[in-house]
Image (cartoon, rainbow, N blue to C red):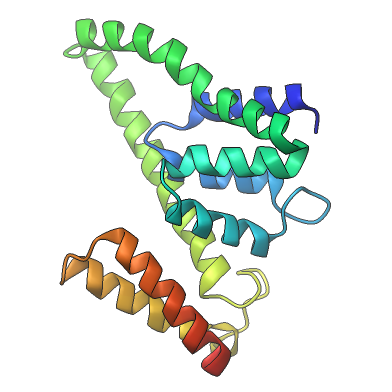
Length: 189
């Protein structure tokens, strides 16, 4: 993929990613992950994990990495700028319009519909994460309990409890999950 194509592709993503970087996951998967594409599913899963550990928004970190894998430094610059460019241009214009007409029924409907669409993208991102971490293989080839990573389920349950019940900071949960993965996955898969 050329640098210009990376910029334009990530501009398109920047236009579509209402609600944050996790909305980007399904778009990236469709465009860059799979046979004959830039990233394998395993490498994409690793990328998302690394994006969580590094400072900055997951969307920017992911765009930078995908751009680098595609076309080195110029690719990372093009992808990153492409992702933020639509926001910089449209946010200023949109905010004036949204503030002015926020009580109009049509605007309320548009904003509600965008939230529902963004929620669907988050659910889809969760399914992708589950496939990358808890299901061995893919949902299409899932045959039952033998295709579940019990280590992955244990780590996910532990992380959920630490976040929900004990209110741990996400950074510590991710670090602990990595440590647990290094210990548990070789033992029980």
